[in-house]
Length: 90
Image (cartoon, rainbow, N blue to C red; front, top):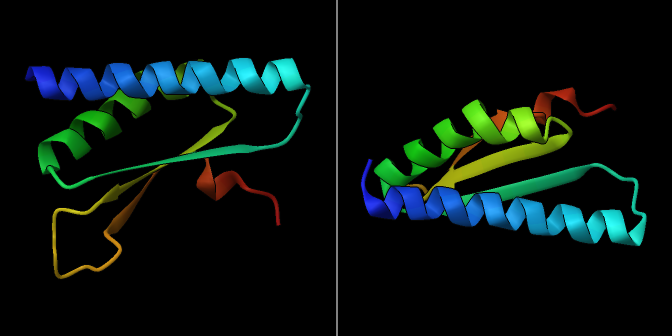
């Protein structure tokens, strides 16, 4: 893993912790869904692996989604459901 991939993981981890501090301080008790996008397939894989293997274990209540925007033929990117989305109540 290179420095850019590690930096993305650190930034995502910091962002999630920041969001949880805000949510906890405000008393919000609603589902949280977080999405990320990147146009570098290596970064996408590093982020997906990081969320699956670390962040989801620490924050199982968060719905994580990643958008792979590396293929310019797919206008909005390829949606990768990492965790949680299939567990939403309907």
